[in-house]
Image 1 (cartoon, rainbow, N blue to C red):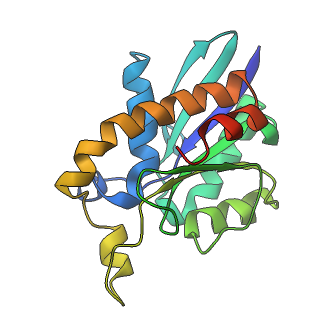
Image 2: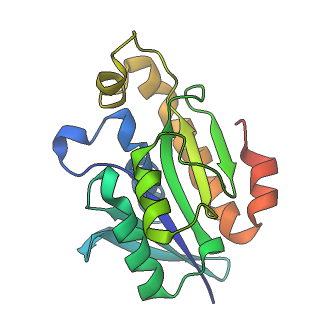
Length: 188
């Protein structure tokens, strides 16, 4: 049975729960709820899994904080014997319009500290990223406040639909493959 490691990046703690930077956690939380499963705290993160169309999806929320996510990703890849091509990292992206999905099979960290650490720990950039656009609606010098800020009321009203689309994209990644998923979901 093929296994997939789906990693939602975020920061642990109530203080960060509803922030834009935690969209990775929010997406895997949504998928877990949709599959009627619950996360359990394990080594280096909260983990749960489900089966869909003959595949096993392991959902991970690293508890190492965003900037040290690589250690958790590496540990769970090794523990579950998951090949690099079956790893999907979900993160926020300031350079993409709010709610827009961009999935790519490789690429640079683009200034994202979570990806920098994953690149370092895995010693490669050849893994799939699922970038969720959070837009760049902040004033000069306010990037950190914006990223660590909570969703606006308008964003919250749109988010539910975007979370459902994100869950569909994750299932597609495991069942239809990267190329088909990119064609079906990029720009949505």
